Image 1 (spheres, rainbow, N blue to C red):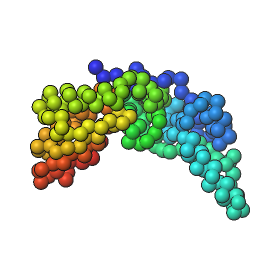
Image 2: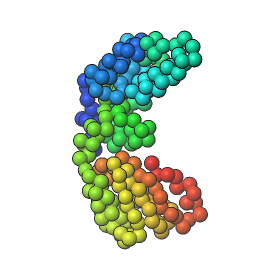
Image 3: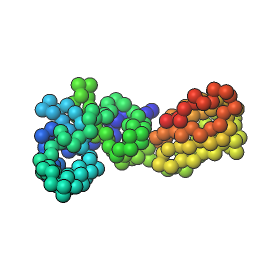
Length: 215
């Protein structure tokens, strides 16, 4: 049974309003020890996300502009100026695997969780996801090799190379057909603890070029 985001998310969320100042956000980052937070409107709907990286980049840019005599101060900036929008969010009913793959693809550490109306319901982080998976890369690699490749598909272990890092599985080797290779990738993607699959298989079929990267 898959774990839902609602079972892993944190409901005590540090969020800011659209007009929050740069200094206010910097203080809240330090106090709460987070690296990003959602930006919400008066109805608690998530409209964007401000990260520590966004603030640092703008601080460096503004400092350079001031050195050239241009009139812009970081103190004048608000969450609305700095946020990434629209925000990428997940639903409480989404699986933890969905959240993990989004975080991997977007290279972010956390995602806001919103209810059907778009209101902030919580936040889920990489730490939350890892706590649910609670599986080592070696455990995942062994299941992919022994249970999926060998038992389900009857392939010899030496036919494929399986590497796992931080839940990301890389498959290499030669599939007998492109169709078989895609089925194996799909099965591996659903192994518990797998965040993403890099399909590096070689296919003898002429249509192998459309196999895709396997994410």
